[in-house]
Image (tube, rainbow, N blue to C red):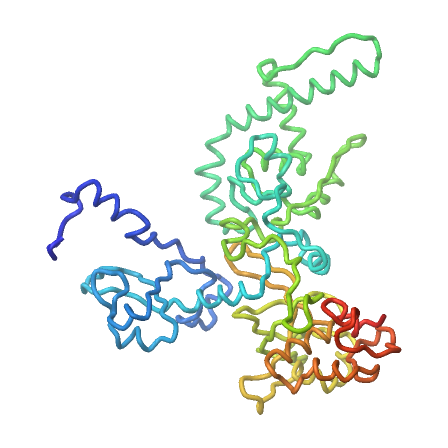
Length: 481
């Protein structure tokens, strides 16, 4: 454009199309995560990483980076961009009021994404009950399953899939503040009072029709029942139905939820209204939605983090062949367990995340170790190691991951019970002098094989290259034969 400033009105249609395309323009930033009112009075770090990225990450080749060329109308300062090890930036404003490009580093979210993808961990549907994390660990369900990953559906399918789907037109009432709830009532709910009455008439007409058909079938006279329509429902019948629904709170909420397309309530709340039911009535209580406790997500449940549907694949070792178990991931002990301050479970840093440990008797929350002294191997879980550079490390096995309604990635990690998988992972990086291949080549004896107390004793040795030592058979050394 010969260096002159050209306004958008004088640009040709072809140039305007190119300037608005994804090739020549960046997408608008998405809204940031909402604030946590519980942390309003706590210390807040302005440089803390947000729950999810809001701007596009931009990179450039090394040759262009040396000249400050990042694809914008002006070069970026070399003093700032060359100091960064990873060339990743996020642009807040291409043209600020000072006529400069406002940018910051974007390596936090981008590197965290790469770390997560290296674990090959798919995104799973959250468990219906947060306390049932063990069941979700054993058999996680992918968010890409066809029965739950539904975007286009009619009214009948919406009712059929209300406990599986993740998209709802209405908000999640449990996550709304009092002010937002009152605004929602004034602007959305109360203006649809006539529509809700028409909905109740349709439902009442269907109920009366089905009741008449059952009555004819019970009599066995061969007569046909009359079909009741919504137009034939009188105001007196509708008023009697409204009075009945005011007493049947669970049924009333079901109608309101389906009419406004709200996320279903938990099973416990549905069972609370059974004591108010009239005698002789029955009601089917379906399984709750996985988003009842936490609320439906703001985007697709995968959030584009991972498109894997399952983790059922084999990792191939260059010497030992296909492995039965996935390689564990090394994590850092951020905060050991401290009974004095009621910190009963240790906190870890795993690939840029702070995972949660499942409930149950594990190495992290061993019931027997609460009242006894920690074992020598678990000392780093009870106190800081000030002598080790970078802090204490531990190997964890990520089980499944979910994404909450606020965009936070929740990872459940367990301790790798397969000691041979941990030894192989240490051998790959030369840690602690682990030499599985050398020990196995000499012939592993029963006393030299690390195993859990529940395994059966190994009564014979194995030679390298045998059918029982290659690939998945090699893992059997820790489990007995």
